[in-house]
Length: 422
Image 1 (spheres, rainbow, N blue to C red):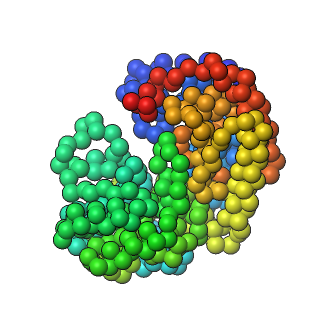
Image 2 (cartoon, rainbow, N blue to C red):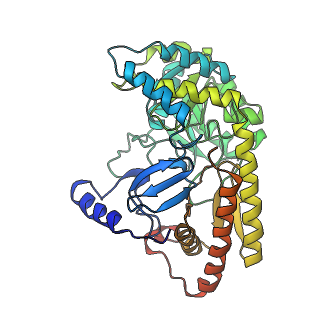
Image 3 (cartoon, helix red, strand yellow):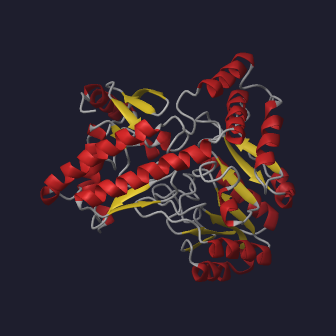
């Protein structure tokens, strides 16, 4: 990269006048290195161009929606064809039925589907459905897990009341004793256990689900009559073609989906078993744009590619090539470099780097060499990436490790991340 950032800086100045905080939500770069771009102009395949025209190999994949490559021709063609016929209509098109049939045909636990727009929509529908089914209030979640940005689950306290966060009990992910204690604390009021498919919290190492933990969550729901919800918004279709907990042999009652099942076109979903069908039919949830036909056309084409191609096997092979190559280069440079999470959703953290000063420097060095990695959030691979792309990233990483080694002694604390060591 190493190019100009004048347009980005100009846009930031303009944004500061008309957008609260200059930018908001997970797309704000307030907690990223100072040289990271805030604004982008276009994308194609595995690459992204910022507002100044600098080209980047993108390992964030739009925070997950890019599965088959930005601007995938077959998926976009399906979207455009439907857009020309009709998109936001007085009622849904028949594509909603086709998509529900296709999705439930792929996901073992699912007998029905409801569609919405964002992951937060889906998790909120799941929560309301569980409460309607059980006629109870309490939900259990793992500490540090992210399930959306609505008041009941947002990680930030501003504007949130104690009532918004009421009827919640927390446990430690993969800790059976902690989960059992949370169920005991909920007593006879337990409506649902919410589970992330993997531990993909920010700032900490990721962890696969312990099969014994997943099985115990299922057993506890069966014993209490609560519903088990797997929030697959982030990991769906990146670990399995089924629900992600299928890899540990556990089926939820509800699963939530979003991000990539239409390859970036705006749609999310709740899938459920017959057990929860009556409850789902009883609640009122809706949105003017939830029934749009064009994203459903894109989703149908995406799911076709999921079913009929070796996309997942190729992603895992690319992820293994990246992981092995980074481990070799980090070791050669003398760094403890932890790579956790699924091969398709890596997270990178340095040993002895509590305030992320090493991670920030290395990530910026990667950016300057044309590779977008994130210093504290899990990343994603897409099928538009090639072995040559991975090798390009590995060459950039080797140079970035060398740069970090040369500058490690002079690195300063990252003031914006002071909360990590508070």
